[in-house]
Amino acid sequence: MGNLEILFTMGAYMLVVIGIGLIYAKRANQSSDNYFIGGRSLGPWVAAMSAEASDMSGWLLMGLPGVAYWFGISDAFWTAIGLLAGTYINWRIIASRLHTYSIEANNSITIPDFLSNRYKEKKKIIMTISALFILVFFTVYAASCFVTVGKLFNTLFGFSYHTMMIAGAIFVIIYTFLGGFLAESVSDFMQAMVMVVALTVVLIAAVIKAGGIGVIIANLDQIPGFLSFFGIASPQVENGVQQLSESGAPLFNAAGTYGFLTILSTLSWGLGYFGVPQVLLRFMAIRKQEEIKTSRRIATVWCAISLFAAVTIGLVGRSLYPSIHLTKSTAESIFITLSTNLLPTVIAGLTMAGILAATISSSDSYLLIASSAISKNIYQGIFKKDASDKQVMRVSRLVLMVITLIGILIALDENSVIFTVVSFAWAGFGATFGPIMLFSLFWKRTTREGAIAGMLSGGFMVFFWNMVLKPIGGIFGIYELLPAFFFSCVVIIIVSLKTKAPSQEIQQEFDRVKANVIK
Image (tube, rainbow, N blue to C red; front, side):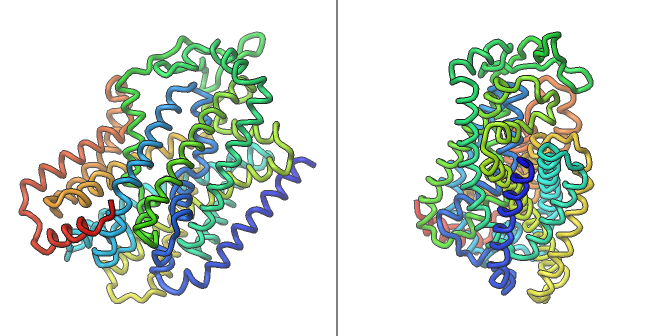
C-alpha cells in the first residue's frame, strides 16, 4: 500500500507540472523569443530559484549525498563550498553586465547569439562553435537526468531501470514541446521550493532517528578519514562492491590523503558557474536589472541551505544504514532510502516527486537550450536566415528528439554514476564558455580570434585531460575543469594581444554597457 501511495502522490505532483506547461503553452508558442527566453519577463524570485533548481537538479538530491555517503565529508564538502562561492560570485559580477550586454548586443536571446553579436560576426564561426559545444555537453547533461529517473523508479518500485529511463525521456520531450522557457522556469521555481523543504525534512528526520549529532559523529569517527576535511574514506571494494566483515559491517581501507591541490581542484567546481548556459540565460531573462540584487540574495541563501543539507544527509545516511548501499552507483540512492524509511508515505511521495520533477524540469531546460542552439543559431543564423518563427520552432523540436535519443543511448548503462556524468559536462561548460564570458564582459581588448581560440582550447582540453592525462594519476588526477579553464584564459589573452584590436564600434558598445551596469 505504501508504494502505491507514493506512486499516486508522485503522479499528482507531475500533473501539476504538466498543468504549468499547458498554462504557458499559448504564450510560449507566440514567438521564438518567448519560447527560448520567456520575453525577458522573469521576476527576482523565479529567476533566482529557477536558475538554482535547473543547475542542481536531481544531482543535488542524489549525486552529492551519494559522494558523502561513499567517501565521507571532504570531497562533498569542498565541492559544496566551491559551488556556493561560484553561485554568489556569478550573481555578483556576471548577472547585471550580461543582462545589459545581451540587450545591447542586438537583443541576444541565446548564449551563442550573445557571443556572436558581441564580436559583430559576419561569418558565424563563434556562433557555430558555441552551438556545437552546447549540443555535446547538454546531451551528456540530459543523459545524467535520464539516469536519475531510471534509478529513482528502480530503487523505489523495482521497475526496470531501462524502461523507466526511456519513459522519463519521453515525458521530457512532451513537456518541453508544451511550454518552453517560461513553463520550465516557473516549474523550476516550484521544484526549488520542494527541493529545499525535502532536504531539510529528510535531514531532521534522519538526525532524530540516528539519536542525535553526538551519536552520528561517534559512529562515523570509527571510519578512517570519513570525517576529515583533509583526508578521504576508502571503501574496501571487490569488483566495485564494498566488502563486509563477518558481523556485516562495511570494510574500509586506511584513509587517503586530501591535500591542497585536491582541495583546489574540488573548489574549482565554482568556476563552472561562469559558463553554464542554464544559469546565464536567467541573467539574460530577468525583467529588470535592479532586481538582480534581490535574486542574488535568494539564490545564495537557497544554495547554502540545500548544499549543507545534501552533504549532511549523505553522512547521516552512512551512520544509519552503513551497509545498505555497497556500490558507488547505488550510494546515490541514500536520499531515497532515508525518505521512504523515515517519512510518512504521503510526505515521502512528495520528496520523491521532488526528485522526479526537478530532474525532468532540468533536463527539459538542457534540451531546450541545446535545441535552440541548433535551430536558432545554426539553422536560422547560418543556413536559412529568412526562416520564420514557426520553422525555427519546428526544427527545434526535431533536434529535441534527436538529442533525447542520443541521451538515452548514453544513459543505457544502469551503473552510471550521476556525479561523474554531471562533473564532466559541468567541466565542459565551465572551460568552454566560462573564460570567454568573463573576458567578453570585462576586457575590452578581447578579440574575435581570441574568443574562438579560447573556446576551442578550453573545450578540447576538457576531453584531453579527462581521457588522456587524468588516468595517469598523481598531479594529473585533478578535476579537468581547473587546468582547462586556465588554459583557455591564457590562450584568450595571448591570441587577443597578437591580433588586431576590436573595432571602434565594438569598443564603444563595451563602454556603453559598462556605463549602464548597476553596481
